[in-house]
Amino acid sequence: MVSLSAVLGVAAVELGMALIPGPNMIYVASRSITQGRRAGLISLAGVAAGFLVYLAAATAGLVAIFTVVPALYTALKLAGAAYLLYLAWQAVRPGGTSVFAPRELPADRPGRLFTMGLVTNLLNPKIAILYVSLLPQFIDPARGHVAAQSFLLGLVQITIGITVNGAVMLAAGSIAGLLGRRPGWLRIQRYLMGTVLAGLAVRIAADRSKGLAVAP
Image (cartoon, rainbow, N blue to C red; front, side):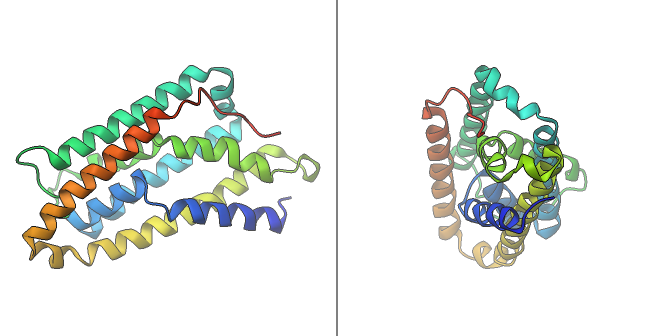
């Protein structure tokens, strides 16, 4: 149903996108280093759930609504930018603590970690763009059910995305103790992370595109 070249193409493009630091990677890595690998896994599960939401929407053809109603895409973009600015402020505000400062994960926090991972992914415009602009490039109507092809190729994307973010999560957790012994590094990281998040927010908000063009 789906050609090998299509699978390899989606895998290659997603790998390139996943290796570029973005909101998902930043959130998963920071939670893992701050509160340990358990928190990182819960956060990663939330990100994975976000991928599944987009996959379901793409398979059902609902993401194409962004093309018909550009205001929805604009709203998603601005909400994502606002969320990144909130995270940036939390990093640099007076009295703020570094996301790499080790501390115990409270027993009542897993639900919030999962939810924040989900929200981070859903408010990431790059994912919507990926599903609307990327997947159609590799779908061949002559090979059968278009929705089934979209679903299978989406699973390839999710597998690559979760694998990359999972590897980052595992590596990030292992350096929590090292950074915890160096307060100066934590302070530098806090301002660097805030700057990166603010830069991402400005870049997203400044994007003048009004909607998404679905590839034929």
